[in-house]
Amino acid sequence: MSRETAADKVSDSHGDSERATEVERFGDPDRRMYLKTVGAVGAATAGSGLLTAAASAAAYPDALTGIRGAQYFQYGSWNNYQIWSNYANAEIERDLDYARSLGLNSLRVLASYEYWQEDGPSFFAHVEHFLTECDARGIRPILVLFEAPPEDEPTEANRTDTDPETAFGVHSPSRENVIQPRDWSGWARSPLHFTRRWAEEFGEDSRLLATEIMNEPGDVQPRQDFVKDMLAEFVANAPNGTVTMGCKDFQYNDVYDENDDLDIHQFHMNLPVDEQAARDYLAQAEQHRANTGKPLWCTEWQRTREEPPNRFLPNYESLAPIVDDAHANGQIDGDFFWQLMLKPAYLQTPRQNGRVNGLFHEDGTPFDASDRDALAGVERYYPDGWQNHSFPYPDPEYFN
Image (cartoon, helix red, strand yellow):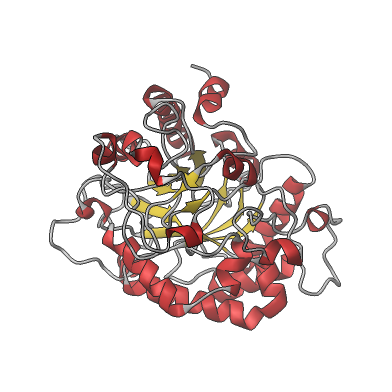
């Protein structure tokens, strides 16, 4: 199978890589423990405690394998700006406990250039709290500086919208910023300035697993030049930092790694048509990993599209065993499911199609106690506050 054919079978379309997730059972929580040896396949010994992230980094500074994570937005945040403008310590700590209950050792989180522009000290204070609380739970996150897939511009109205029918992810920075001529001098608080300040403040922080420059940049111009400028600025100011790029497909890593700057390569496998399409794509991942000699992470995955009962609902059971096999077979070094908290889809078209993403309700109860049980007819759980966060969840009558 050619690369193009396999990639076509993995997601519905480039702009609408629908992000659904529900992680329920990847197996025993021990499989989510931080792996103790670089390149090891076996999980930590049952019953052993999680190392703090800082201790793990000190003991195994090159440990970029055995990564098990999830994409994270708070329950009530609809875009990257709201992650930080709505930041509440108690809520974050509660959600990190949910992640820890799964044995995850990483989370993937979008930063916000726009919130930094608005209130840089608060943004950095929130990041400091987030890294501290992650470290206490043995979690080393990835922070993503810029975001490409959303259609909406980061206007004040779009950034602050909380109506589930109209609040979607936002492009960050604005497309006007992306096409800015490559002379960044004299522009205070530019995206380049943000990248430099991030690199200086957190780029080499041992609590951070990696900095991702942009999610799904593709290779179009002028975005490619913008991203390369940001990557060069990060490397110049955090030469010992770990850096990666949120590439949707394998070949885009080569576009941004021409100077051997990327420490990890990435790809996304959101919605493969079926199990065989996923396995074919992972075979290509194995070949890419062998060709480059670099760790390879699948930083977005959801479910297969053909499994019942409804292709728009979370069904991790359809894909999780294949992802686990990919770890065991040495095809990938890390995976991140989309996403930890249950909510309507992040992007506009999947949202309007009725896709639901995530695992945990706000009160910590999973949407499905087990995908396997759900297929056997076990009733979904609907909390008291369901109607306060309903769009576009299916009506409970659907399952009766």
